[in-house]
Image (cartoon, rainbow, N blue to C red; front, side, top):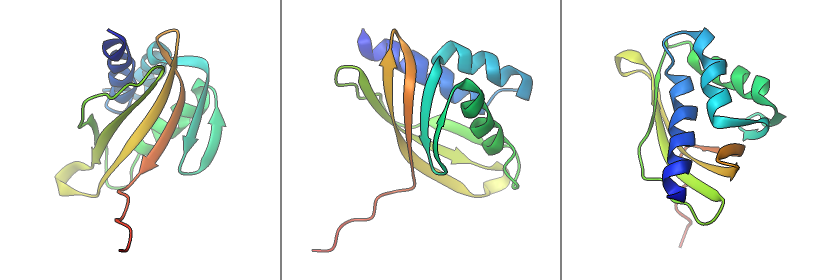
Length: 125
């Protein structure tokens, strides 16, 4: 049951990247995130839905065109933390990025997102 709740919040968060219009992004994020959400992203730490909205809109405005963000793994959730893998692909076979997000949930909403973009290289033997 807990993983289903987390999956719902995560899938709503991801749907903001794929919204049909920029004006839908805020409403989707408000359904998935706490108002004081903390995003640990590639450019550092930001706080609040407005900051996450800017992050999402920046990705939506990728120079190669509007892309598609998908969750490409199950949601793994030990206690209040969850992780999942994602892929972002731009149109016409453009750049593709993948990664893993770790999220913390409070009262069924995401209050922290840690974005790990790219794959981890294997360690040298």
